[in-house]
Length: 448
Ligand code: GLU
Image 1 (tube, rainbow, N blue to C red):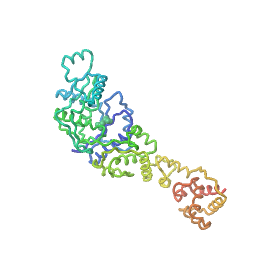
Image 2: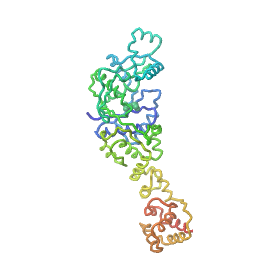
Image 3: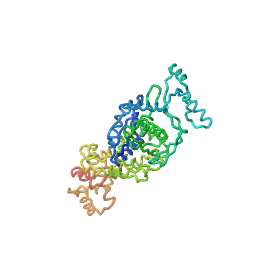
Image 4: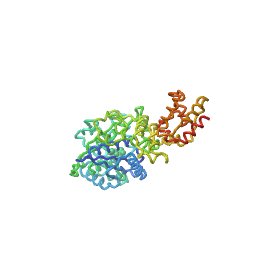
């Protein structure tokens, strides 16, 4: 079967590093096997879902260059969930419950107080017809739970975690539908994965116990629907933590938007997140095909992956140093050409900084005050400046001969006079951009 993966965000906010990583890995997995990568908008929670976030998610994926082969929305599949619910009900796998949130909380507290795991006690199962009818006559609407089969252990071979075992008796029957009829995440997701032919569910470790429950749902649905579809393979990746090793709030709020605004390149985000938490080296790889070909679930570790913003910045600089002019020209100062980009590129930590260095070329600049000796030296430089295709080499060798200076005393006053800075891009590349007239004027001015 051709690989089909999905990225299933809830449109309740913009994407942040944690979910970009999940999206990226699903994209890499699909692309590696020549399969399909779907965007599935999990918008069953109509109170919290917003259209602007759907647009934002699309824009974020677009910026990252993660193209998808189709988009689905859960709000368009409500009829399928209804049908699946009826099938599970007919098979005796869902049951109505009437406990209020406060009652459930109280039960939990009592269990915890006795040192017991807070598992739902299935009290609603023992309600008789008349008791239910009485509750409904009083206007109490039920919510619905999926009944786990306690008969058999739940097992799967996880693509990252290896063999997994769960005792269903240690899990609560999950609520799948609220009073009033709206859906919780669990059932719609399993229904969609089957209907959309998803072969691989790759998501965060926080979903491991959901998978245990969903495996029983998949099994029940496949049996009830006589489905040709198969249970997907499951893989759960270790969570992303901050540099200090803890799940950080900041990480959860580090959005694609904020990364973009701080001058981070999509290729740097992708290169870092593709391999973070794996045994493969994190490198400034711009070629997506290399990342696709080397993507391998076997290389994923079980320990939390540490996301370090300084590592992202370092990688970003290494990415910027490789970016061709065509890819950045729309973000550069208007009159900056390819030669300008090549001159400043090695000095950049981010593309927007190009404008600061370009300022050196176009001026005005603010050179420091020079000693009398350096002023005489710079006057000599102004006299000796001759324009040629390589004016810097010509000027410095002429000055060397004329003054006997070498090393720093030879170069630094020139750099300061010509750029106003002590360091910066290679002068051999900068001087032709500054141009003869301007270079002469700057030297003459510095010479006083
Ligand atoms: N909407 C779910 C979430 O964002 C999807 C989880 C899944 O991949 O199944 O957590």
